[in-house]
Structures are given as structure tokens and as C-alpha cells.
Image (cartoon, rainbow, N blue to C red; front, side, top):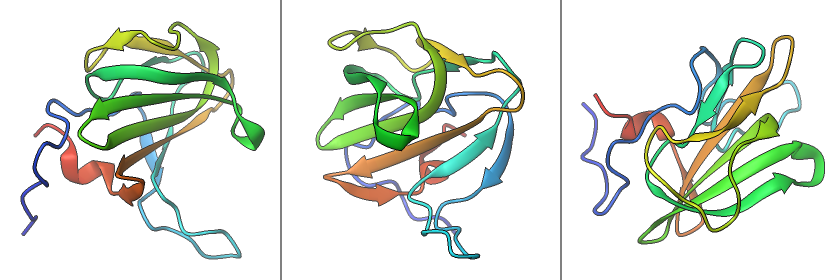
Length: 130
């Protein structure tokens, strides 16, 4: 039985890219840190979209994560998408669920989606539109 999503959770939440789930929320092991999100293996050059409506607050390279996009959904909710190769959005842009953000890299790219409420990671799969 799944708990009801917390109040003011992003509505119409969806995966940012089509693909196969390769790491679930909380996965770890073999010396890896516990996952704060989910990882999706996508096809090379796949379209990456906003998982929910909001405003882009960061878009660009970040530390060892490559190119990332951070979307603020309001009410303390944010989504972080890592692993993009090309951006098709910019800081300040308002997006809807499904709005293009950019493209996955070539080969067998793996993208990561993190969903946070007031900075605390939550399992994005619990919020997907069913």
C-alpha cells in the first residue's frame, strides 16, 4: 500500500526520459553512496523533459554531475535531472510537465532524477502520474 503523496506535491509528475530503471531510490552497495534519486538508462540522444511544472533555477554543468537542470516546483519542491548532453532550456524559464529540457548523451546514457521537498530526497516513483 502506498501512502498518499504529501500536500502540494507536484501534479502530473513524470519520468524525464524514456528508458529502463537501472538504480532505484536508496540503492547503494559496493562502496557506492545511497542513491538520493533514480537512474534511468536511455537511448543515445533521447529527448529529456521536465518531470513537472515549475521554473528552471539552474541549467548547466555542475561539478562531477555533467550538465544538470534544477526545477523549482513551488512549495519547497525541487527536481534535479543529471546526465544531459545538450540543453534546450535556460534559467528563469517556466516549464510544464513534458517541456523539453535537452538531450541525453550518445551511446548508453544514464540520467538521474532526484525529487526533494525542503531539501529532503523522496522517491520520485511515488509521485509518478498513474
